[in-house]
Each structure stands twice: as C-alpha cells, then as structure tokens.
Image (cartoon, rainbow, N blue to C red):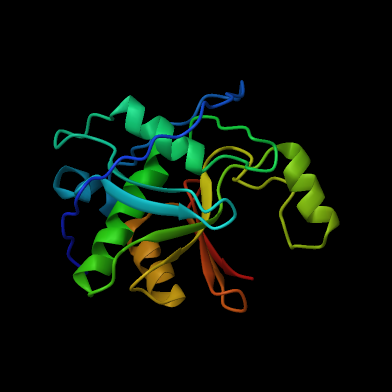
Length: 194
C-alpha cells in the first residue's frame, strides 16, 4: 500500500471551545486493522482547512510514542466543530490518525496532503436542518457522535481516499462522486455510495 512521509508542524491559535456533554467515545484502537498496525510508524501530522470557515491548522497532534498532545487535539477539535452552532466537543482521535495516514499517502504521491473538511461534528439541530433541506443526511449520523468527517485530500482522487480508508479499516467509508468527497467514520466497517 501507499507509504507515508513526515510533515512539518505549524500551529494556529484558535478561539475558545464550547464543550458538549456527550456519551464517552469508544477506544480509538481496533487491534487487527491496518490503521492500528501503522500507528507506531505514522507521522501524527495533520494540515486541515475547514471549507466553511476558512480556518486552517497544521500541526503534530501526538508524539512518536502515540501520546496525544491535548493542546493540539483541542485545536483540531475546534476546526472540526459544528461551526453553525459553534460547539466543539472532543472528536474521536481515530479520525485524526486515519487522516494523518491518508494525508501522508497523498504527500507520498506528490500532493500536499492537505485535508479540506466539509463536515465534522454536527449538533442535532444542524443535522435536523440539513435533513430538512434534503441533503441526504442520516438521522443517526456518526457526525452527531463526534466520529465522522466528510473530506477531500489534496493529491488524491475521491476514489483513492475511499480505497485507502477501506484498506486502513477506519470504519465507515462513503463515496460521494457527484460532490467529489469521501465520508469516513469510526463506526462499524461498512461502505456505500451516495
């Protein structure tokens, strides 16, 4: 499969984060998946831009031993927030590790590996609004559980992102060719096209 390259680290200062009281996240680790086998070798680096707010953060979110940097994780959580409601709960770290692997694969292929985030966390209010607009949003979406991201990755086509996420065993992988984005989540392993 695709190899991974390391990236530089730049930090962006972001505003305060409103936190939700939500159910605890499951363990981010699933022994036996490619992603979990790769974590000790992955460069824990992400370069993410929120497509709606224009906010960008490029940073290392863990050390080489896999210990998370809480400050960096909060910065990522802020970019992944429900920007409509300005709510920023803790996002499942498994998503960040999966995106680091995918971004590294894109850099290996000559792209920047920058992730464009189309949708991260959603509050029930935002999810209901999007459903009412007929956006094809699921009522039980993993976006509500802090465990999903709709993304584009510079340097990889949508199908490449989806195929790599499937190989990693991240969880759910959805292909949206008309809008040219990939959905990944840390729920049960499954695939679909929208």
